[in-house]
Length: 410
Image 1 (cartoon, one colour):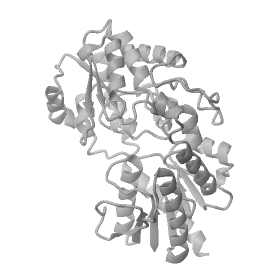
Image 2 (image 1 turned 120 degrees about the vertical axis):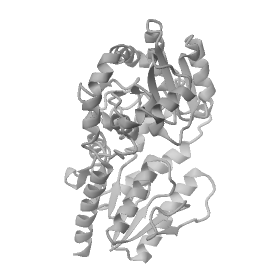
Image 3 (image 1 turned 45 degrees about the vertical axis):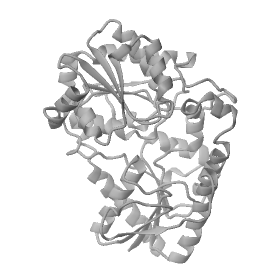
Image 4 (image 1 turned 180 degrees about the horizontal axis):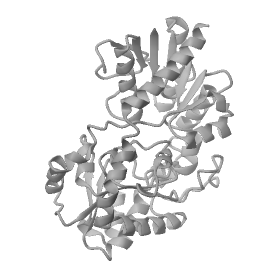
C-alpha cells in the first residue's frame, strides 16, 4: 500500500520524530510504499522511505503551522495514498496519533512555567497557541479520522472530554522502549565511565533528572525537594541533563537553596543511555507529559522512577517500581477538564501551589535513595520495561493502520 506519514518536522531527535522514523522503517520493511510528508527533513530512516516536502511560504511559527496543515490537505487530495497517518498538528488524515496530547491541557497545566514572566506579559506565543488549538479542533472534529491512537489513558479521557471523540474510535497503545540500548548491563562500563567523567564517587547516590524544558518538567520543585533531603543525606547528588533557555535561572535557584556542587547541570546528552546507566534513581516531577519516554528508558535501565500523575507513563508504575506523586501545582489529572484560573502568571520557580508536590517528592526521595531498596527494586523495574518493547508498539500500531486501510478501501 501507499502510506503517508505526516508531521511538520522530520528529525532524528524528539519523541514523535523517533517514533515516526521507526514506524516508517517498519512499514517499509513490510513492503509498503512509505512517504514522510513534512516541511523539512534529515536522513531517511530506511532506503525505501521517501520524503514529500511541503514548504509553502510562511513567516513565524503560527503561520508556518497553519500553512503546513493547508498544504497537507491539498497534497492528500492529489496524492491518492491508500492511507494517511498524522503524527502532529494537521487536520487531514485517516488515522491520527495524539502523541502530544491536548494543547489546552498543556496550556492549563504547564505553559506559564515554560515561559518567562516577561514573555507572558508581552503575549508571546498567543497567536501560535490559538492556531494550535484551531488545528486540533479540526483534527478531532466528527468524521475527521477513522481511528485515533493515544499513548495513555490520560490522553484518551482528555480527548473524549475536550473534543467529544467517541471512545469506540480510540486505540490505546503505550509507547515502547529500545530494550537493548537501555539496559542495566551498561552500568558496568558506560555507566561507570559517565560517573567518573562527571565526578561522582562510588559511594554517592545519584538522582537523575533528564529532559528539555525545565519549567514544564518540574525542575524547580524538584530542586526544592532535593534541598530538604540533601541537608540530612550528604551522599546524595542531583544530575540535571537537558537544555533550557532559562538554565541560569535554575542555577541561581539551586545556589539560593545552598546546594553547591550537590546539583550539577550537565547539559544536553546525545547518549541518554549512559546517563541512566550512571544514575541510581530517576526523578521527573512533570506538570504535563502525555507519555514521558524517559520513564520507560529509566525503567529499562534498571532505575526506579519517581514521577507524577501529570504523565500518562505513570499509569504503568506499581509500588515496586517507584512512586506516582501529585503533579506540581496542577489539578488532579483524573479530571481532564480541570482548568487553571485565568490570568494566573506566577513565575517558573517552585511556587506556593507546588508545596504539596515538594513535600511529597522530598519524602519519596528519602525513601527511594536507600541503597538496599534501590538494589532490591532493580529486577522488577527491568521486568516492567520488558513488557513494552518498541517492536510491540510498532506491531500494534500497524494493526490499527491496516484495519483503517481496509475501511478506506471499502
